[in-house]
Length: 289
Image (cartoon, rainbow, N blue to C red; front, side, top):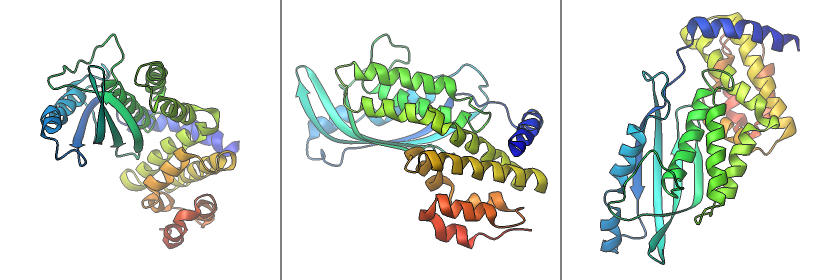
């Protein structure tokens, strides 16, 4: 408890002094729509020919939040459309959906279902559930929430709430495929067992600041320990957590920087215990004492 209280004492001050303003939800998202299994169906190709640009315009031109319009969040989206069926007057596409962000908010959805017709209007203000746009919105909210959590503790909460609300709507819609799993995803990220993971992510980026931008060995060491202690706490409760695995996979190659000012290898040894898949990388980390 002593180390935790110390961090909470200095973190708000540093945030006030050196952290940038909370990011606006202006997005700069690169979108790629692929139809690898439908190349020999020209009518389908023609119907989907504008989808890439329409999704790009929709995501990047939507004002996702009115605050702090001077900061842009980057992301990448790949929509892989695999097959379709005709359901009454609707053409229903099955696809995979991948999205990633600079802080490692990476999601891969293997079972997406939506309807789409050429010329369909993409409106950001809707009164009914849209199986394609609300799928996009759901993952955009997850990306935004995760990125916001790197700027201030739990500042992503409003967007996790929005994602959960969409998942609830999706389960009740005519396009319910995959929405129960999406609901489980957002509930897991925000449940009590993962509070420490969200704290660890915030301290991780603040720790890197005191290594790379404004070197301070004392603060960097305290933050490095805070990160590892919280990751270990999550591992002890949920060793197979997909969210914890996502953090490790996104940051193991650069995490050595966080331990630059460590006086011993205790943090690295603990990382080996809780993330043995990346043991070799941690073994090669050199302390910059």
